[in-house]
Length: 116
Image (cartoon, rainbow, N blue to C red):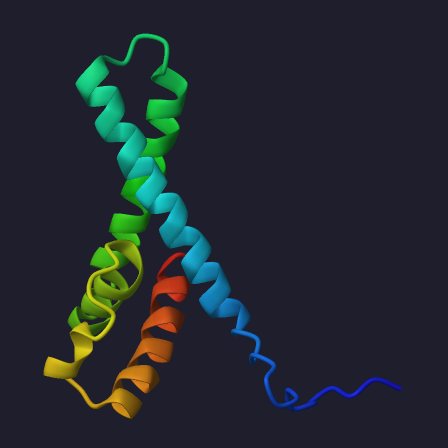
């Protein structure tokens, strides 16, 4: 029989929650879409029309969901995932434990706004 709630052995890293993995994936795709959109705008859109439209739709979806979130969630998702600023950016706002609690809540709220 398997051990469901098994603690990681010393030296092993604890696995990230699936919501955090999903959020990182969405954010990475968002940044890639923004980069491709910028390249298309600089070089013209002639043959990249389908990619441009798909990227634009994805960026709009992420930004619409973000707009539906609370202000603290918008700040956390922007700083922590979408625009990846300084890793300790939150210290001017919250303690470490408060931040990680709010971060978990923000991920849940954002995914809920995306209907995931």
